[in-house]
Length: 463
Ligand SMILES: *Cc1c(COP(=O)(O)O)cnc(C)c1O
Image (cartoon, rainbow, N blue to C red; front, side, top):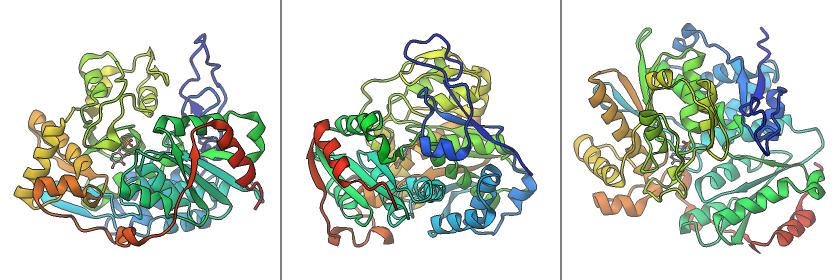
């Protein structure tokens, strides 16, 4: 059965906006994956969104995660990848557990922290790496550049380690990553090179952006693995389908709570619902960067710049990059600068989505209380998710089946946990040897000329 799914740009209707030439064409998944974003700087959106029959979802009960991943991936990709290859990609990507932990009554915690770098970003990065390797042009090498302030770099680096035909260069600010993060980034090795830049995160991002737009580097097959790539969204649909299939009764509705920063994770749930999953409400709690809950309440969008530094640091985002996709799905348009060109259907958005800001104070209180009352250990991101769910349930007065997502392993935050609970969380198996790993970065100043020289002398173009 052919769906012929094509990918359009969220900026396609931005007629007469200075600096933007709307991209009116559509592309295949392969092109969307390898290009990352549309030529008009919009984000690629699949159309039509494939449907999953509820019977197929329910039939996953008791089955492995890879079966759920196959069902979702096939719905999008069956025209572009043979089943046999897709199956191998999925099986290679997901070789770690996905615990669904009962907290109380019908409220569960889904721990997405058991992958090799202990954050939920492993789910998307691992599958995207294998998809890129499959789709690259035969005989060529792809060179992936990533600027990171921590979690994304290690997830992407680890995911691409040993993947055929691809090399990865991770740029991080020398003074802005923790000792453990630096260790994670420097020691991946193999086809993944860490570059420690004497500058800030913004400098790293600028170097990468400049390299992408430099015509004299066009023959280096540069590509990006950042979070706006649809190849990172697709794998994040799977765990919602999986959790539902394992926990829900016949035709039952479910509430998911997703601690949110750039909204890529929550977008996976939004797509899952549109594919047919009976999601009653998508709860999207934020930390003190509250531009989205304020938007839902007031109907006016004001980004927060610079963003506020909160405990849940991976969610310190003042203008979520995937907001453009949410707007588009509800009939609106917002650009990269945060300017709204058309407002989405606010009634419909409010009916489907609940969002609330959770302060650092409440985050700590939640870690304490949930540990004391239920014996369940949360870290700051998961605590924002859990508190957001509690607030939603208090306001709705409802008792539905609920799943809140834990997006990182508590052992990544040893100081915060020790201070609050007086315990030191065990390292996950994947990180047990972290302090003994060996390897160092390439060190570089923040000037573009240096970086360009480095790329021209080190990068390989052929496999
Ligand atoms: C990236 C990240 C988030 C935020 O996810 P988005 O998809 O950007 O909303 C939340 N928690 C952790 C631990 C993360 O690394």
